[in-house]
Length: 274
Image (cartoon, rainbow, N blue to C red):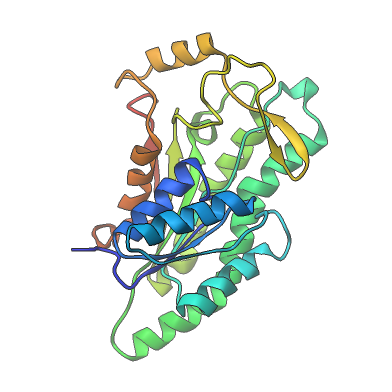
C-alpha cells in the first residue's frame, strides 16, 4: 500500500544526493513530486528516474535564493497537480571558514539558502494551505499536511568552522517550531531532520584539494580531508556515515500518516552520535 497516494510533494534541492533520494522515496510511496535543482540536467534526471519507476514528477529549475522562487515553486505544484500536501526544504550547501576569515558574503549566503529560502517557500504556500484547510474543515474531511525542514547536527550542537552554516541551521529549527504553532490550526505538521555525517558529494573524502561545486558562477570548495573524515566516522556509534537513502528515510517518517500527531520536533539522524 502506497502511504502517500494522491499526495503532492515539493522537494527543493532534489536533483542530487539526499534530495534526489527523498523525491524518489516519496514518489515510490505514491506522491507526485515537484523536483527542484539549481541546474536543469540533474533536475530532469530525477524526474526521469521517477517516471521510469512509474511515478509522476515535474521539474522547477532554479536557485531557491531567488526572490521569486518560492512563489514559482508553489505555482508549479498547483498548476501541474492541483494541490500541495508535503513541502521538504532540503536545498543547501556548506561554505566553511573560521570566523576571522569569513566574509559577509559567506555569512549571508548560508542564511539565504538555508533559512530565507525555506521561509519564502512556506510564505508562498500559506494562502493555499489556509484556504484548503478551511474548505476541508467545512466539508468534514480534514487533511493533514507535512512540512519537513532539513537541518544539521551543526545547527543543534554547533561546529567549528561553520559559524554561518550552524547559525542558519539553528534558525531553521526555530522556524520549524514557530510554524508548528502557527499552522497547527490548519492540521500541518512541521518538523526538522538534523543530519549528521551523510555520504554525499559535499562530504566525501577529498583527495583532490581543488574539488569544488559551482553555485551561481561561484566556485565553492567541497570535500572533507580523508583523515578528518576517518576520525569523524570513528566517533559514530554505528561506525560509519549514513547513506542518502537512510537520510531520505528519516524525512519520510515525518511525511506519513503515522506522524500526524508529531509536530515541532527536531529529529537527529546521525547514527547515534550526539
